[in-house]
Length: 238
Ligand code: ATP
Image (tube, rainbow, N blue to C red; front, side, top):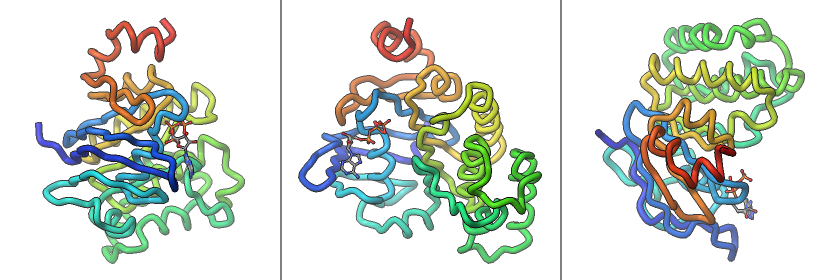
């Protein structure tokens, strides 16, 4: 299996507080990899560290064939790493469509951009209905859809998705995860998914890592993780 992203010995700190203490993690091409763990384990920080966003890091992060740990957030995005951060990063005063177009401001292929916009509307018909509506007036589920669609407008090879289920009703979460499965299969985008809800994450993911206080303590295929006694007790409530 070819690895799209390879992380070795990744450490990250906010000021003097070290949060990641040597994380090793791989994302295989074409797969969904889930990063599970309790509150405060360092999941969000791992995604930020990959993008060199808001956090000081050491260790190596390779994407495709090159190191990206010395690059800026903008350079990493331009190489094909899309980040849907916690809090979603939506411009609430702009319309749905304006937000989507901001996701691809660096692209010059206008015809392909128009096609991608229609493709996003086919994945997320609610966004089409609300294309002219101010993003701040969208429901939580619609805002999450908008954040994912906006990141996809840049045609990333790897999508870093931070807690897409956060604060959403179970039916909306089911809907979004169903669409994510289609996107993985149809768009050739690999996904690193951060989730506290281990059950829905393992349903979508091919492979998963469990993070505890800044270290990977377990990893395996989703089936292996689902059958692991400790994972079942602590994260699946069984
Ligand atoms: P959650 O699901 O609660 O977000 P998480 O596993 O994603 O958990 P992180 O958000 O990565 O965890 O946080 C890991 C630790 O880093 C926590 O103790 C948190 O308080 C701390 N932390 C996160 N962001 C900052 C920041 N900007 N400044 C200082 N400390 C931070």
